[in-house]
Length: 375
Image 1 (cartoon, one colour):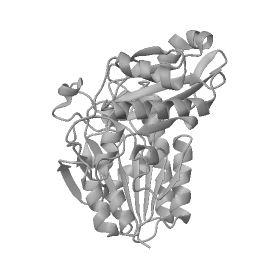
Image 2: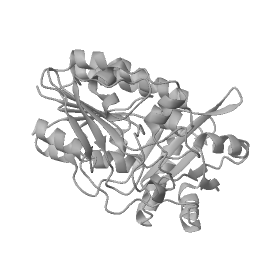
Image 3: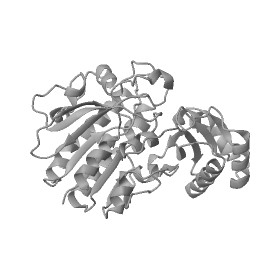
Image 4: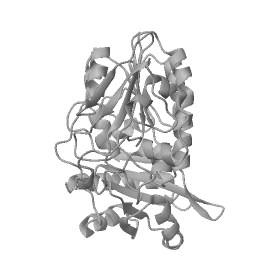
């Protein structure tokens, strides 16, 4: 059986795109290289063998004369720097018009949300780091039970509640209501995100395993739909199902974080009969990129690298393994938002001599490789 295994290391960009300044960044942003420089290098021997060090000068990652994978850089063609845009383009869909971002949601949207959810009121409604805003507004949330609503430089409508105060099922219902309101108002918002938290040892702490994303449906078919129409099975691991609203995903496995995602991916490689295994590893972005934690990010990359030998061990001879990313989130850069970056590309196959693919003008190259391999 011939399979494609695609692993997206969320936000592991590898350098500013030429138009980064149009997105509020400068040309110094480089998630992977800057992490390595500030953390005394990366220890990723398996990606090093694949050719990661041949793509850019990355401290601690050597170049190799015998790469085991194709390697190179993919530029983003769509106008954005968010998860949905990145993943959609990886699967062959270029967004002609970017999702909209907000500093403050319109009163009409907020009032309709309050009315239809019967939540009585809201807190926040401004751009913020998710960890900071729940710390700032938790006491008021405890008094009022009002949901905390916030956004960022990305196209997101985020709703946070203490699930010991408001049941998580209620939070999900509120987010579904928000999704419907935003769609009907043509808001252009990419994702509504449920952000459950609990107060643990007096500190508001997000519960990542209960997070849920409510995305807009892709406006056109992706390679996922094409595979499904051709009788192929596709497995989404992590938040893949949410990103594509299930479109073209025949099976799904939610995860509680990177370690769980890596283990679920390994189990799928061992046992799954799905033609495409498609994994998102979110912690690099959610826990470390946005929180500007370079050391945590480095450790997460190194953990991912440590699983590669087992992935390879259980791959079929005709399987391919693609490792890439969806945007940047440079933890050495100011603020807490994504950064507009190109991404690395590695494609491994057993008994294969890797080639330098250079720098390509779109993430859609991944979908082209999948199509050629599986159809």
